[in-house]
Amino acid sequence: MKTIRLAAGSAALAAALALAGCFGPPSPGPSPSASASQSVPPSASASTTTSASPAPSSSTGTPSASAPSTASTTPTPSTAPTPSTPAPSTSSPAAEPTGGQLPEQTAPLTIYYIAVGDGGVSGPTVGCGDSAVATYTEPVTFRDQVGPSLNRLFANHSRTIGQSGLINVLYQSNLTYVSGSFDGTTITVQLSGSFLLGGVCDIPRAEAQINLTAMAAAGAQRAAVFVNGRPLADVLSLKG
View 1 (cartoon, rainbow, N blue to C red):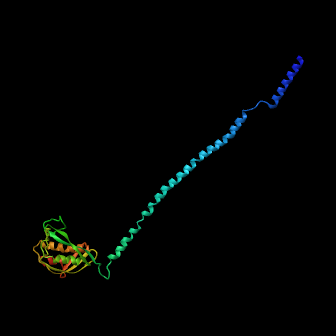
View 2 (cartoon, rainbow, N blue to C red; view 1 turned 120 degrees about the vertical axis):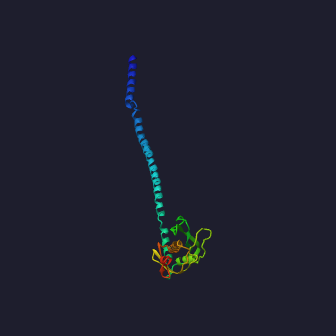
């Protein structure tokens, strides 16, 4: 009986060993690690997608840089002052005489009188320490300003000029404007008539009133005045 039980036990042990050799022990280690290695690529692809996300941010920065460049180009057309240039061209033909005459214009006349004892404070020094002072009339319409200015001076037969303190040494003279010409520098004036002055100091005063009034009217630098065909300086001299 003992022999039979021993044989049965050894048979059972041999069967267990055979079953163990067929299935063998499970190897859990390598299968999860392999699955983990397979899951790594998606994480890497996710990292690539996150790294690709800054790319649009850089592209969005590009148009913002292009916006100031367009703004910088906008002031260029505004700096071209083309409409202002034709303005002087339109005024130039208006200054040209039409039909051989000067254009008609309206402006105040400039008339010179004398400030006695002023010593050149109010104007050019003339006479015996006096000043020649410019005064202005109401607006007058004229073509040649020289004639109207001198005729206004000669038509004033008052010695004093209002309350200004100025005097007119020509108030007793009888003079008339005849003609005038201007060469761009000198105004040449022809007068007729005679002088009646009050003394030696009135000679340079009268000369200054006539010369400066004619020069202001013509815009001249010098004046050459003739009275009855003789130079003004000769007529006003004590010898004349």
